[in-house]
Image 1 (cartoon, one colour):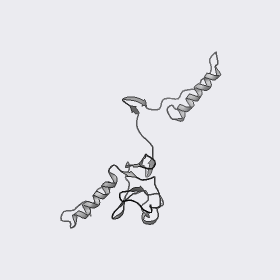
Image 2 (cartoon, one colour):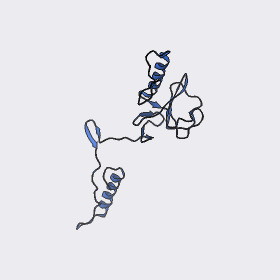
Image 3 (tube, rainbow, N blue to C red):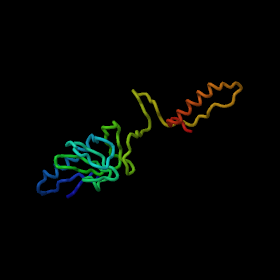
Image 4 (spheres, rainbow, N blue to C red):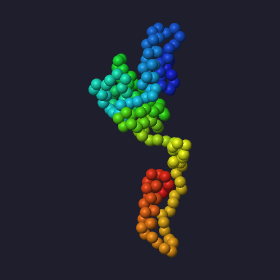
Length: 165
């Protein structure tokens, strides 16, 4: 049986008997992936009483019926568990945490947002990291309270990665 290159979805071959089985299997897998959502972050033991349609990310040390399917997306259907091996860049919404999980460099990455800039209502709010800003020093008149306040602001900007250290 042939399958698609990226997700391994079953393909129907010419003259194949029981084509509906392979077509239905592909639809089950697509149902789990299109606008994909999982119930919680990766877990090793399968849930005791999953509802039909629920999906989970299998942990690194799976047990029970999930054994041998580390990091896969497990989808429960009327036919039992189906497993989808993740490919680089696949993303799912994690319902329990309201974060997005992206499969990146061989592992699930939760809640990390990547981009070149953040724009809200057409206005750039955050862009590339700015160059380092030196803490206040020198000058003929020293205002220690102002220096403490400015140093605190700079420390928070550095902590958030908005300016270099």
